[in-house]
Image (tube, rainbow, N blue to C red):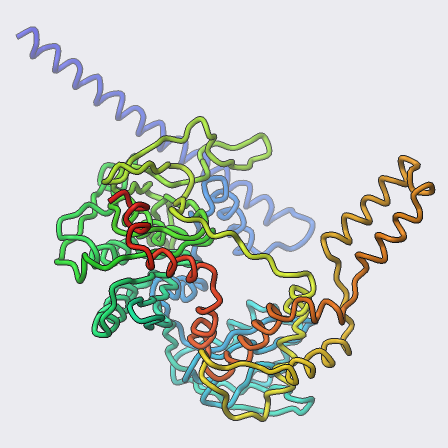
Length: 544
């Protein structure tokens, strides 16, 4: 009886404390909502300038959420369409990308068979009016919103092409960007799948690509997750299932809310568990990409090649709010099969300046894959084989950043109907000489790292009074490291030609052509194929 009496007291006390905490929380919420309402009322009634109520409240909400993490965001009713695009890859529009340069809105790329493509719009066209409304002062976001709209609606776009105005009517359609823009066999026994997002159709498209490649007798497969920012967790689980047996744990989610604690297992029979598999990642591979890469790494089913991934180990869900708005809120952390959480930044702790920092090295833990290989938490997905980042020359960056290559292709290929296939298209020396003449006529200015540091060295030498006595040395260094545009165009011809060819290919074969043309020179692909060539190396990396 004493034991029962004690249990009753404990239960009653726990219930009282729990109820007290709930009451305290509700009181704090109620109190602060009233304070916020009072502040808003006073600003609206007495502030020196007229305020826009909606914008003011939205900024307040955004500021509140920014104190949590960058993935917890408010989605207003007007932003719902953009949010839908991130989960479905679909939107109503014309199917073109644009950019703003010197207050000009320029079409940079078309999607294959898009309304823009079928209507005759071209990269390089300058948009000057949309439905008789001038857009020179509109932001890129505003122009993008003007171009979007319900499927089957018609839009009148006035463009400038070769300084000649032209009106083009475009009928909007439901644009669906593929999650798998390209898959192909890249050598006698190796397939390649590029996966750009984890939308609702990601697993379906990946399965179709995989089955198509399997019919072509392959032993090896490369899955390219570079610059894939993630998406739907369930799609990631389905894709891991293609290569792992039914009933395998893929990922766990853990939260302070019990119902958010879940384990995700493979539920279907795999497509192929015998393929040698390599997954490519980079610093922009995040979220669902990291679930796929991390799970396959933990299960010793794939060699991970590339650079450390982004390090996003947080799970979001969307919740409906009043008046058609929503909130995307972080509800849990996810853990790969070995038990590690790859979240890199600790958003629960802030510095005095309100900044979140990377989890300290002293708090990083070691975990083990199925074969006993060491893997770490709190650092994203660390590749099994690292590919060093390529840095392009200063002149190449200048040619890209200031659209000189883009403008040259607009100028030189406007009247050319077709070119060779992406894998075989090349420009010759005569064509490159034409580009050089075009580029040299532009006002090209750039600074190399060597040139920059030489200038800094001069400043220090003058400050420390060493410059005058070494003037001749500095003069010789100036001569050696001075920028010679024509010489640099020759010195860095190979990388410049790559971008010229890629830009030309995109006009005829779109995004798929860009990717296909780059595969033979891609250092990630080269590293992957070299690993596949040696069975022993592949097995040693996986600890098999």
